[in-house]
Image (cartoon, rainbow, N blue to C red; front, top):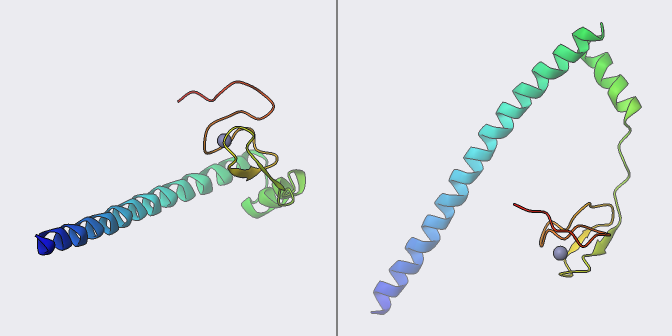
Length: 104
Ligand SMILES: [Zn+2]
């Protein structure tokens, strides 16, 4: 009985590892597609602005400087640590400074 239980545990772990591996591969594929799409969009927008892609990116980063790392706070609803400038809690969906919840 113990052997069956142990082999089940190993199978269960192996299948989780496989799930993570599949999930990672899927995410890598999606990131690859998004990078390709991003590059095409940047080239398109740069061409429409009569700029080189690098000049376009320089202008964008000048107009939209990176925000400093945000402070954190605890969700008033569930206590999860979240960014203080978050619009909603990623854990429970509670909108900050509001009683409404994100649906879906
Ligand atoms: Zn919450």
